Length: 468
Ligand code: G3I
Image (cartoon, rainbow, N blue to C red; front, side, top):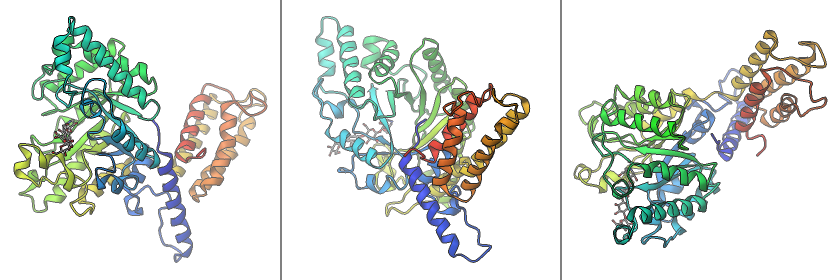
């Protein structure tokens, strides 16, 4: 998974500022220099970056919504296009694309170091070009015509953003809203269920590096629809379809959280080997109206849902569907508009973070591992590998031949504990070259444990933004 270098850099600047402040504090004052805990005043984005996952929000381009620039980069390190990339928004008629708004959002996200989730290439119930149905109906071979239009669309859009949009919701809501049937949309009626696999293949061809997701809403997580979704993912993977992740929408509007089946459902999907993200999280306040403190109860619900995902190594992040209670889709969409304000998000109407913001941040913090702890783990793994004989030196007898490398790693850990990130990067760079086999002599470090240690070290350097 890609990190967010500029946010890592920001976290580092913040940490350095805290260290500078510490020098002025009386001896004994406790300062968290690694910026990994909520008490350290890290934002949600900084905490997520430290945890190596994404905290995202669905937003419209900054020219359309003032909440976008408020949210990113300070609070979120990922953005989803709430509307700008939908087929019928990009192209009011088949083939007549206007990328200007979506481009503005992508430019904005890049300028602010945020990861971009593309949403969505194929959505049978969503906005489509107004002439799509007519063109297909009028064709001599409707299936061939629709297949051509569909694959042209995917090639055009994914190609337009190749290398910039990190992940795509390739197909959104392939299943019926409440049942385990396929959604009976134009694509299914004309092409059959194969339109799903074909869409993924077309997206992969247009950008082989993009992470490709199947995104879905669930009325509950233990019912027939959830089971059908797991089966569908399994079938697609078995057929060799380039499917890399599942987006679990998590609009909590049908029944109040917690959902007992939720953790098991996510774990079942993760066990299939795909990334798991909560892609459209919002929790209506109405569920907690009777609670002593409705916002605190809402915060618990957010923490429970977020925690169920982040407990899994396969979980790559969460995204709230909107930024503030002032701009939620629920307040303008029937039937939820009747009970507006639904107040389902992390910020209130005056842009103040709600208890839910802090609760979600705490969940991210519990997954975050301070840099110095990561370095200490690396050193322990190194020692264990030498002890087990799985790391050695072709030139010198272990462990003597590895003492220099061990000393370098230990120095890196010490520097990170002191928040001396620049110096740590330099030292860890030397260690990295030794482990990568790039140093002279090239066979100085060998053994089956070497590649894994090299990977861990590279990941630590990536999080530190050493090459940025
Ligand atoms: O674009 C016009 C705009 O020009 C006009 O001024 C305005 C006046 O009403 O309408 C605008 O279009 C609306 C658009 O949102 C932008 O606000 C559409 O009528 C409205 O239907 C559209 O709703 C979006 C909906 O998807 C349908 O595309 C919601 O904002 C968006 O939050 C919602 O998101 C979906 C996900 O994509 C998939 N999962 C469910 C989720 C919630 O329904």
